[in-house]
Length: 455
Image 1 (cartoon, rainbow, N blue to C red):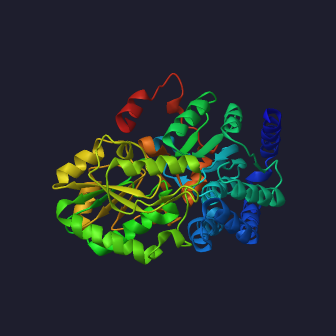
Image 2: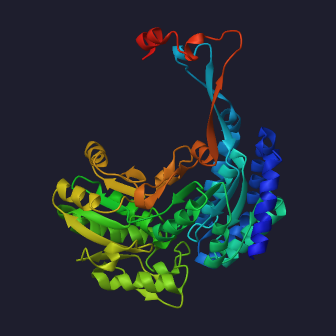
């Protein structure tokens, strides 16, 4: 495998150095090729998502394929503009020069994706790599073998591996890939693995984009619309059975709204998934036995107010609302990444701010309540992204950046930011030859004039 990987990397580097990937027409055609591939493989990909995750066709389209499709369309619409040389102002001291910024592709990229949204989180970064003019090695997750197999088949059918290649395998294969020298590594996964990626990249000073996770807080204040908050939190927490890096991880709720929220949350779950959630075709299962064991163990970390049923054979965990949770318990120390929502009450804004800011910066931050107060709280906290009176939806807009900060990641992507992530912004100064001012040359005879007027 090591030799195979080295050969692919060498072939891609040779192809990149040929200059073929740099032209606008080439990039445009490759984006259209990916667009055609996605349409042809819609059914196989959706079938594979059902097999691996019990993800319904509707959810597969909404949370996976449509997001990639939207990203491709956005790049096709704006790529020519993004590639254009941009002029910047030039100070008088540099007269008669003019200044520009041009973008160039970083080169050979490695994209490593997780299992929870295996189509979106592999192909969305790929759109950026193609758009920027890079080559790419794609490493899908082994935890969703059916999806990974279909993705490999699709990529191999539509692209030459000297341009875009898929490498399958477990963490040993990841380690082999990280031994190679890339021009950029794009990794989506846990903060723990993100640290290992960054350590490996440091050997070659390879730039990285890390899309990680963390414990994203969800705040329900005293003036929140409780029915709406309950519905949108229930949706955000049960989407993909909570196996979403930006899922509401824990709930901070004003004490006065607790009882009302619990009743509204119960009704919201019923409307979303029916009386018997286990029979809902839209309710995803935990990805493997290890994930099931970890998430189900959190049910012991508090008093169950709602839910709590499990089925080990199906890896099913009912959406669960936990009360009386200790801050030191595992469910409050680890990213839940499942359909268990611990609930903590508060009485004042200062409690919320202290609780959130004492912890690592999360990937998402959710607030339900007055907009003005929400903006004040947001101004005193930090997170990758924010929704006011909603959850999850900031990832749906391909025109705004998505990414983490601190422990939840570095760098961002989507739209122009995806293009930038795989590009280098190169400064360009053009100086004509018809005038050559003498003051910059030794022995600096005009130094007094320069100091007076330009310093």
